[in-house]
Length: 520
Image 1: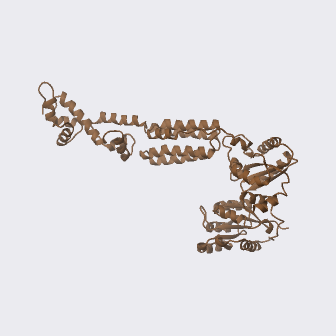
Image 2: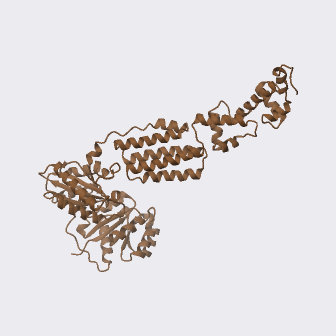
């Protein structure tokens, strides 16, 4: 019998991919779906890995669309046959794919099993030195994927009973891209796991399958031996596999009875737990129940954190985040995604506050990207701690560089500066540059923290100093005007009268030195 005709599906819509995968009995007809990709770029990588005979590709996709993908595929792999999946409005695009080797197209809105099968057979007949031959029924892997995806469940259940004759089950699995990286060889890991299962789990039905081209699953089916005794053997098996593949990481589920519970066990918790190595760098295998029994996640006081950011207490805010990371490591909770999302949102809150102040927009933009990458790429909790210490250092350097202080400290420093430099040509723009504020932000900030705006405050301070000079010194009013920062004598007199109700001369006569007044 000829080999299966290998099929690769390249389609960005998950539901469409699932529908195509379960539309026909592939293996009964002599075909086998070997992979699926969400865009042309991913598709090219999988073509190199799986060497499909036929590619089913959508036209409109992100990153690399079907036209560019078909053109590149034709240049690299001219023997691969391409069938284009399109909508009614895509035909203009579809025509261009025929220039690069596409053999046919199928309209997705009218897709049906017979049309798909006929088109596949037509494409297979054009493959040099290949003879399509019907298979002997759906494989274990196909039936397992059907059961887990919800397509053809009754038929899949019936077929799987032949592989699993015993009443009791548990699952062992590894999410291969998560544990080993996207370039890991799934087939090789499958072979290693199957061989290890034969060695460490004799006397039970233990079958390996690959789910969604990502998760390597071992279904352990048994009748007599206690679950705990079997899981001890699984631990030894995982340790052996880890010696061959150091980054290998497996999870095993709780025990359950009957195939009818397999989908529930897999989907509710098990599949997600295969991506939860975050707090267990060295572990080769963990029980799913170890995740279920972790302590409650520490509570992050978001309100307090926000108040610290608004109050420009940045060191305190970052320290609060560091403390939360340490507490999360102790409790092994919350989950990786939840923890990273909380940290990224909190860091963005600080950086956005700095942006509003007008601090080096380009530098803040780079720091945002650095923070996102450092947090996202931390594979383990220890890595996140190291990454966060680096972020903490970067933030501390910015606080020092721009002399960022709490609101109270900052406002007091501004007022002290005004009190010292009131006689100079002082403007809001000068203050904004001095204290690293955006001009508009400083105007609003000043008004929020004082009874009046900056200009009014500066005039009040200057007139207060003028009053002191007029009371104590025998200095001409024209000179007092310049000494408190005014260049225009008439404007000085106008402002002085606004605040005191008197002209400078009248003020001196009434409140001047006891000698009877000073010079005018």
